[in-house]
Length: 286
Image (cartoon, rainbow, N blue to C red):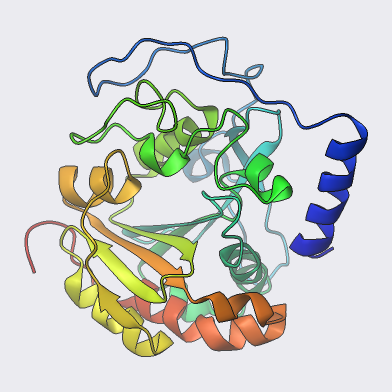
């Protein structure tokens, strides 16, 4: 079922039940340290999938077996799924829909997951391990809403040095279950490269030691390279600036909304391949 159809069902459900659940945070402002668990904004603890590297539940290329694992749950209790492909030395984390109204990366990552599971795109796994998260913000995605159900922008809720405690950013870093799920994946898999899919700016934005990577991806997608600067509490600030790892914010143009899934794959698969296969460069300036 397409993302647009799922959204339509979700919006109808919200209307019939007098609106989707939401609620403000109430924590005081604090420095940029990792937040303690706040029961007011955290759902019941999910069953976190074990590490595929040690429990044998990573996808097996060519078998069609590609289990979706669970990184955590959203505010409304929806599972945040991820999959792991390959066992190479360089890990690439690919995420989409951290902003729920910027969904066009989700079908791309689902297609990448399916292609890898059936044994296609096997060259992408040469010296690579791919961790794929198609829906970081499942509540916002279904409601066609940028923020999560606590009205927090998840891409301002990471523990970067430039974090700013605000109502819409979260009063402390990682106060939201969705941002904690992504942070846990960063801690578990230690990706050297992160690809984060967004919408509308029509560019490949980069933070950290990523300019060459951005140029390669932009050339493959026929988009411009941008360097918008690190937003407070963003994944780009935390991964690119603080951790000095490669990260791209892939801003698909608004025209991506008009593409069906097949056309979108044909258009953006070359960029995904270029970004994954770009030569390893883990630390230091380019």
